[in-house]
Length: 109
Length: 114
Image 1 (cartoon, rainbow over the protein chains, first blue to last red):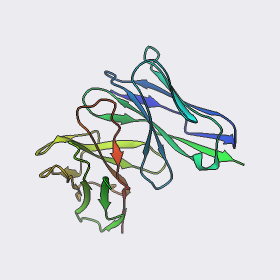
Image 2: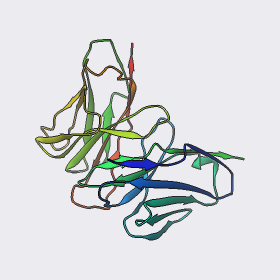
Image 3: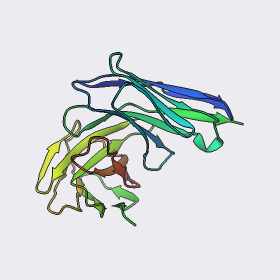
Image 4: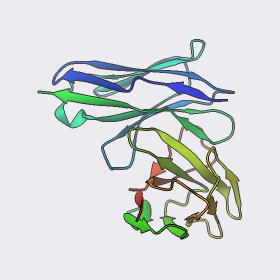
């Protein structure tokens, strides 16, 4: 079966850095995605990792360690608009994505 | 603009009634997906289709049905057999054969029981 774990909620201050961890146990691995979802809206794609290492995209970075079944999303220079849920999703066999429960990030002034 | 359109945005269902949620995409994507999201939860896969006239059950298919008669359309029917249908339903699509292509999501349909 598939199991993806992420913290339920995190709080951080505007301008700070927050790291959202994701651990996974899946049958097969073909990549890991991070999505951002504001309340009541559709998820939007943030990043994709398939090889070990860090992918940087502006204020957002994502890291993957396949041997440890671990990824994190790093949000730097936090802004109020970054308050949202962040979803970790693993692509295992076939084209199916399995999502974690999401991490709700609250940015405080 | 290319994208995924879900309608309606809000839907109310009476007990014992079937309802159909629409999903249309003009991105020329082969693969389409339906997810259910409950408050404070992640997304759970209901059904998916990788090509016209073919679809597979996801993790929570019971009480739902789909069809894929056209590439651009993937409607979801919530049947009366689904005992707890109140949720946010998201449709997604992607290019089938490119591993790093993300799924693109519609804006969702919020279904409630009257």
